[in-house]
Each structure stands twice: as structure tokens, then as C-alpha cells.
Image (cartoon, rainbow, N blue to C red; front, side):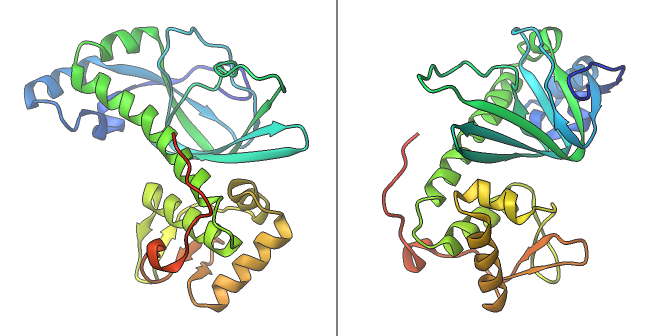
Length: 246
């Protein structure tokens, strides 16, 4: 599935590729589901992506590998969201929330993605086991809560705090601890980070420089961010100007 065109893909055992989906299943049920629940996987290459139209009976697309950014443009302003491994998306649905002002959604693949199609057949199979249905619902809810966190982070007054909160959130989702610090394993441009934290690119660049000088952030030889020290205690370090409810 690349740039809106469906291409032949391999078939995988879903719980082998994403074992966390079956984490709470009884052993016998998990063995049965591992054998039965199979999905077709497609590769989405780097670049602008135009998602294909898919049957609305499908659960969605499960990212197994790779990285995408979803940008929502409303007039002259925009906001970006990072989508990574284990996220489930339904990119063909852009009309869930009616709006008087039209919004434009754009997708860009930053790292070639392996995407499992959870079509109507797979959705029906998942429904045989309540634990699997709940796990899928949890993934969808996780994305909503992740967006709520990023919205809250945008309300910090200082851009440095917005950036630090966002990077630690991405690290919690997909990062790993290394001898140097906590690695965010993606190459994120200043422009992309600016879109996520709701700031201008030059201001974001200044915030990155300041955090680097403070010894809280560095970039490795692959240009990925490494967070130094422990996550901030926001109750002591900074307070948002107002809360966000979802």
C-alpha cells in the first residue's frame, strides 16, 4: 500500500508480529488466535502518502514498523502528530467532526512503514476474543490520550518546556534507554517539532540549543535526540497556563 495504491503484500500472523495485542489472553485462547488471526502487510515508502479508500468495516491500519506524521491544516495554521509502531490509524475518515471551517489533512511517511491491514475479515476474527477487541480499542484510545497530552504540553509558556515534554512523551512511547541517555529513535527536523509543539521553527531551534547547553539534550551520530537525566517533574519545574480536557 503505497501513495494510495494497493500493492501485493505478505500475510503475517498478527500476534506474532505484535504480541502485546494478546497480552491478557488465556494461554489456550492466545495459541488459537495466533494461528487464526492473519493480516496482509504492505510497505509504504518514504514521502507524501495519500491513504487509499478502504471499507468502513475495517478496524484500520496497524503500524508494525516505520514513522509517519499527520498534519492538520486549518487556514494558515497547522498542527502535527507523530504516528509510530503499534499505533492504529483510520486515515480515510476525515469527516468525523463537522466543522464550519474546512481542514486539510496531509500524511508524510518519514521512515518506510510496514502496515498491517485490519480489514473486515480480520475485524471479525478479532471479535471472537474479547481480550483482542479490548486491546484494539485500547490502542485507539491511547492515540486520543497521546494527543491530549501533546495538547496540554503546548500550553506551557516556555517553548523549552513544550519541547522537553514532547520529547519525553515520544521516548515513553517508542524510546529506549542507552548508556548515554534515553533515545528517541527517530530523526525529527526542527520544523516537524515546531509543528508538534505549536511554535515557530526559529524559536524551536533556539529551544533545542538552550536545552543542549543545559545538558538536558543531545543528538547522536544518527541525528536522533537523546534525553539526558530523568524526566522533568512538572509540578516543580513549570505549570501550564490552563488544563486540557478530553
